[in-house]
Length: 102
Image (cartoon, rainbow, N blue to C red; front, side, top):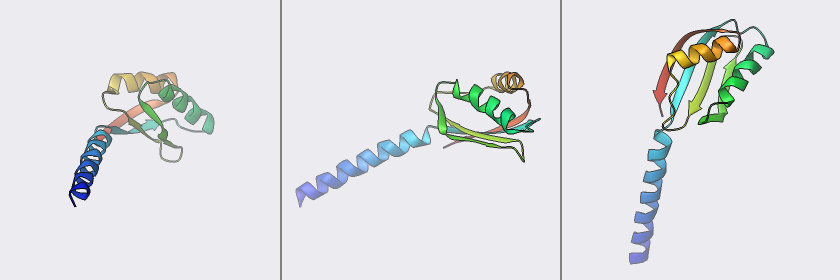
């Protein structure tokens, strides 16, 4: 009985630590103009993947709406100025960003 109780406590502790780490990430949802073709999307993808802490698996670019979504690791911040420069270098125009802690 005691070992089950200790196992349950250990499991709860591990899950709590994992949840806190998962919540530390931030999702960015950015609106851009000029996202006209897959080549434009590739340019944005290439620039974002150069940033340490960007989750490559969560990167999503929607050509139809000009919406770019990405998740970054804890401690990584993408400022408006950095995003404006990144999108300008990729050949599109940065319009807005929404940051959501996860």
